[in-house]
Length: 162
Image: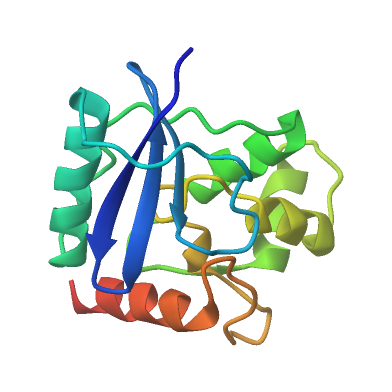
């Protein structure tokens, strides 16, 4: 499975997209925490996955709440993928706490804690489309975002305007 990389220039900095012929596998702000080492240099946006993701990002940054248009295939542990699937259920414009996310997973019969959830959220390889920016500290404050707290704040404000 050959991965290609494309660059998207967002209002809050360049974003790297990793994709295959069939799925989006990564979306990171350049220089963010947990950016995989050894990514190839970005090339032209070829293939439907890159083009559809870029169109979605254009709509998103203009205030649209469209669901993801592409198949997502994040790589991680089974626990991480479980947490990321729960992140995808957080509606546009809404937020949850790390504790609430842990409680939701516990209700599904899985013992978990807010710290373990936080660790999985921090390693989300598909920012924005898997909306880890919608998770807040229990007191409602902004806490932890691999792309930086200023970007998290921007994304949350953008979604509140819609």
